[in-house]
Length: 452
Ligand SMILES: Cc1ncc(COP(=O)(O)O)c(C=O)c1O
Image (cartoon, rainbow, N blue to C red):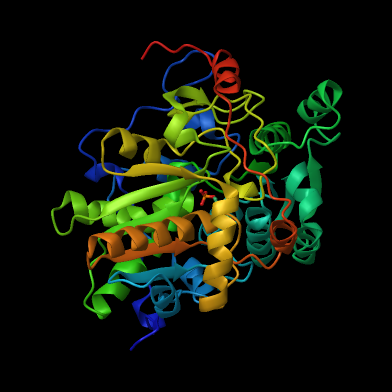
């Protein structure tokens, strides 16, 4: 009975997968916020180095991972695929459950898969410093780590609610030599305007993105780095799914259900896109499902339309499922899932019917995550508790139906810096928030109308 399915380092994938050329319909263009016309590479040049801009619009199906990046990936990759024997016994029934564990990375999540790549291309372009936002702190830690490897400075804007909930993420980010500010901050024009209007705001990823973009746009040697949402970020994460396909093949299994939690969409896409490729090619037919919090339900309750990626309206307009860029979500503990939109490629796949989406409440996800921890030994980050809960629900359904399903989910990170959330759960203090429709309507009324 194998528990850890381990790929040797020699089997580390050599290419990232770009899903765009395989799609039955091309994704909508990215639009300039002023003209509403498609943006060109030059429009993005103040924020990103040209290698990443070219990856953003790439049409090749596979893009080679430079050896310098593969060398760093080998610090923790290939990551293990676990057969969840303990969880299977707990649930009972015929389902076989597997999870890809990304918590083995130096900072504890999938985020370094793209942070290392982004730092590499920025360093190659001679950039001095990267600015970024972070929700849960996982992304900020990942970029701080990656910047330290390539001699780049790093400035992190961390959403206030998470900054207060997780003080040790700050220390970790500083260990890697980066500077960190709670967002909104008094460092930027946008941060000051938000604080003037609401000094007690918990902040949001949309606000923190605006601050980090402002810093990059107004400083010559600073570029901006985003931890999710963009095409090139999702592409860097596909190494997860490429490894998982090989690992399942090693034990002669084919996934029937593929599950990932979704904030901006990067860990979900990272696991799912290679499986979507196989589905489109007719090689397998898994159900592929993104799980989001009921407090930030962009894929399940948002509108599919053009909107800003940030609250301060500084980014281009992208077509995605959105709750409206002014959205400030309740301070749920899955800080990395508190985002108003969803990656345009994930949104497009949902519209094409290639993936499905579901939302869950945090008391359910924590309750199931604790049961998972007690049989599998891993304390998950608050974000992947959503994937775990849905995998357990799926296994329960398989039990009721007597179906021998193979369930695969992404355990995108550990929760060792999130014990405050577990403490709140044990104290009975965790509250469920159903995002009210009138707040969605109010935020959506401020989304620009784009004739497309
Ligand atoms: C461990 C973990 N999982 C998931 C997410 C959600 O982001 P994404 O949807 O881009 O994977 C985050 C974001 O911070 C995270 O830290």
